[in-house]
Length: 245
Image (tube, rainbow, N blue to C red):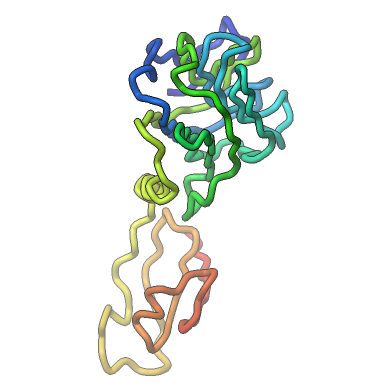
């Protein structure tokens, strides 16, 4: 679903069923994959509640400041943290999650571009005595604010509400599952596990249009080569090859 953005009252938004969270207890995880397309004044990623004094939200920006964002739970025990996710790059799809751990009074959140290998640790957190059961879920909105702010200009690829507080490891698993991994090229020379290869051989393989670069790891220890990464190439040689397609 793509929202065009614009003034509240005239712009499209996503309205989930009232009371959708009431039966889930005091621990939930809100998880989504979404892409911002333009900066809209105080636009929301999501905003759940009933009014400006009863609201749980994540914002794409604060005002029209591209380098700022806000996560806030407004009520009798306000919790708010600014500038932990920004900037959300326009045109980039993000994996975003907000985790509410009721027994520990903890709200934490995550965000990372979809092409990032790791979701990473929580971007921020705050403690609160709020309970989900205290919040009136009459406005369960994606893209629209409880205030008179602009509606988001963003695409929502998938939105999930989980019962319970997902762990970092569980969120990382879903991050990895949703990544688009370019296919590996076929037609390597020398072939896989080929023996009696000359020492001065030229490695060759066809380029794949989805891949901009390839990393080549070479070593005498198969385990070291398999474990090598850009950040830790211990036991293997690493070279980056740019593919021109």
